[in-house]
Length: 477
Ligand SMILES: [Zn+2]
Image 1 (cartoon, rainbow, N blue to C red):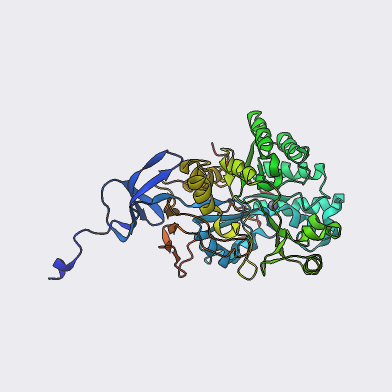
Image 2 (image 1 turned 180 degrees about the vertical axis):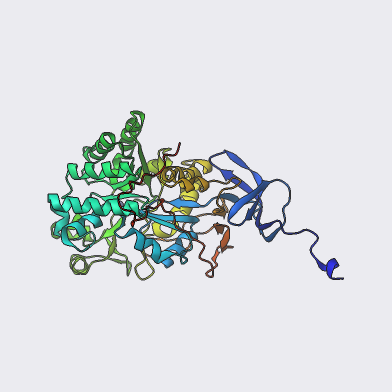
């Protein structure tokens, strides 16, 4: 009797994602398949029906690799929960980076809904080298040049971060006007020794392309890999010319990559250097800024008050929607959100809906690029960029046998972001299921809060108690 009650077919897999349109930008697969997941890996890709403990019906839906976000300042548990609902399965803080790499990874172990990782921060390491403390992206020191002793201290800190497994070196050159060309070149040289890419928020001199030329020259001279962050906000309405120059540098053999986010308004810290001339603004100008915490539009009075206190703002549109479209559509750019930490649960809407916005607005509505091309920019391209330093990334950003089961299932007909600048904290529509390392984390659009399946993405470490060891990441082919 008991035997008769047993299921006819033994569950072969932990999870089966059945009947979806599987798209894998690396192999070019774009067909209806069943995906079997076991022990965190993709264990079957087949047309035959498969049995699993958990069945997901993906008929009429796209099944794609989970999105890899190279530019995520939001690294709290709540941020990770917002990201996974946008289809992100790996969220990396590579632009500004962190000051204590080992401590940062330790803080997140076992708690994150998505995979996480960080770069070692040039600006924060610089502050520590100069001041012995890190006041972040504010203070006079950002505009000062380093002494020889301070430079030595900076170098030691950045090298230690790389030894501890930092994925890259993060630069915010717009925030550190005191960093000279020599300092930048020396940092690039150090990054090149570790085959760590330099993720750079360029300086603000975009009128003559001087900001790009400076870092391309440093990459060329040192052999470091350069990744230009948020090309949309750094190039503004010159995005096509910037893309041409990046292509030219690549053709000449310089390793340059770039990324963009799909909005024409930015978000940054009100206390930063960028607003030192705020008192010269017209009354009308202040109305272009939004205080994130409350959604209120600023005035001269509130701008001054909040600047004294410090916090996050949305900046006015600084370039056209057409420039954003060009950035998103270019085959050179990856998609990266520049998502922000939550301020009372709120942040620039890019923190909640970057990926669904590209898929809904730019792919479906505007047909600015194909679905497969968009997915390549969200999955394969960032995985390839990281694999130079972290060979394990060859198992992410792909739907293939043996790949990590980071999978997003979405409805291409309805996927769209829902947050606005005034009311940003909205989950996207159409992102139905998300699997992280083989663990179902979003089901039917709902976050399953009991799971935190994210793992560290980290370069191999040197043992710091092994004096004299010269460690180099093995060179991948
Ligand atoms: Zn930036």
